[in-house]
Length: 369
Image (cartoon, rainbow, N blue to C red; front, side, top):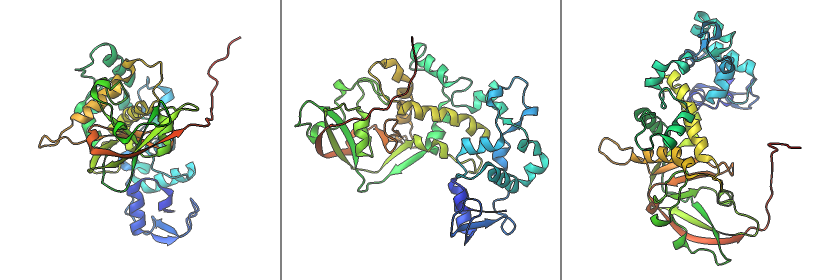
């Protein structure tokens, strides 16, 4: 079978094809002068999907009480849950999986014919030692930390959570990149740079990444995102501070959860499949817009996660992470940062704008007569 590096999003597979392939046109994705890989010539990728596909069990072999709504084809599972393939057809995905997994195709062909599931997702003994939330769901964790045990919960497997935090860690070197923070001002004079940093501890209110009294610096990598994040209203004055980075930092990049590769050495694909759901939920919760009607209790789960990330140390007892990066829910082109140590950034200047026009979009939620 012939395909090219552009047929994939997974960086490991793309790298192998780009290193070993020859230049040509791809009949699958239509790319011109791409790196072409031919399985009749090169066997390097043969078997690369075996570990991942082995995490799935065909419907007939699943427990009788396995939730029917959890069943899906192996193509749907691999395409939608692992971010491996680019925008190619389901037929092509299926053919690639079969071609690169001849052992699975021969020994367990039913996996390509029937819907599949992961039985360990409902095996409490397995979950107890392989799931970040042990045998619980995210909603159970939220309920517990809000109303039962706030500071010493044992629902979280901290060793596993630490492992996945390290897997999605990212160093941000000092470059010319700039970061931004916005504040709604009282007048056109706005705020000077000295007042654009993290609030003093006595004024620090509850946020997604900090509880009241803990001062953390919320930044974004996109100037436009600041207006969305603070939900500036029409005719508001908004001061936008421009920050420069003073030292290299390391962050947990929650946006990269879906890119944790199943092809690494000694990767437990079953455990990873289960925990990806929890990690994606953490990213979603961090990205949620703050609403005026929110209770401080609503922020406790993500505050707990952020405090845990800040507590992670290396073998020498040194703090590993300087902050958390997560997707802005208010502006798709922006990434947000919750910085644990505000002194690692300096506001070099600020500019004040007046919001002159807003565009509202809406979604009908209910209708009454």
